[in-house]
Image (cartoon, rainbow, N blue to C red; front, top):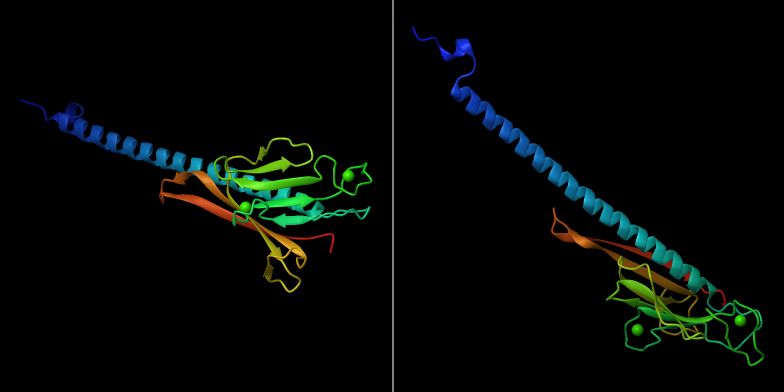
Length: 201
Ligand SMILES: [Ca+2]
Ligand SMILES: [Ca+2]
């Protein structure tokens, strides 16, 4: 008399079904791990981008705050927005007397006293050019910034193009992740804005 399969162990069908279930569980686990990894890598990208934004903004605020520092009443134009005059306000020229000694001709002539800060879309970075030393532009905060805008602000809070009327420089720094969030198929973006009072006013 033939014994039922159930009495002596697993039937072929049972083994097949349990293999299929095991396979499904493994596949689900793999999928979960993969999506976790994806979200982790975009989180890391967002953190990097936000750090770059903060560093870029801190740097720009520090530099703009020094504009017009002028203890010896030298002749200088402290702030010029769009110094390359291409109509895009992603560059600013700053003059300040911050390093001794000063020459008697009344110019800002020491390193870092006459600089242009500008946005480079190729490097996705802020560049600094020192007009005194003639040193080549140096990229700062590379690969995190997607745009920089400088705007002159009047005492009543409105925008002006006249440096003579400006009491502050509004700095906007935009950031964008290097890769897209695969869940949304979009880059993650963020912006910071800061008004820096001009000290020569
Ligand atoms: Ca420009
Ligand atoms: Ca000086």
